[in-house]
Length: 135
Image 1 (cartoon, rainbow, N blue to C red):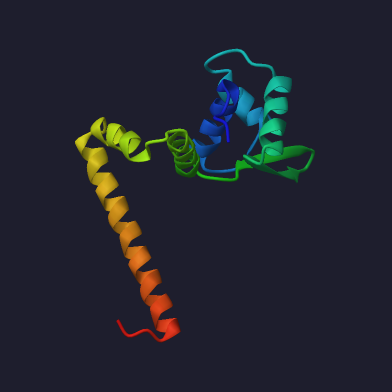
Image 2: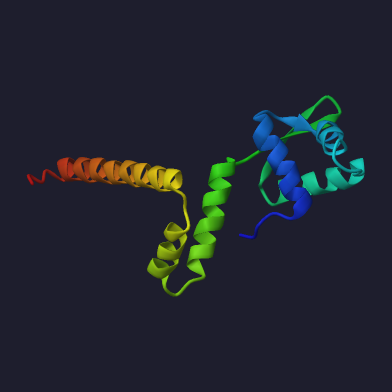
């Protein structure tokens, strides 16, 4: 998986922020508040994002309506996982990452780890019950 290009990221950012499907015209109109961009360019990039399966589209009248296939958080997690895979020392990479996060981010990380641990424990208990293990 590669990261998004500049215009791809701008399109995805709008769709994630709006949290609703949108037409290319809506995206172009919003982008043009910051810089000039051609309708055809945005249409082409939206089509590319659809081909890459980052967007799904539905025909409404004569226009395509686009919406993301994943959340911004899921996309960010995929990028983080991909970056981690490039390191031969994942524990070291994680240590450097955690060393640079804020206190609020550390608290959020602890909460996320606790949720994952609880899900793993619940899954393991359900598996053990299904097998009839008494532990």
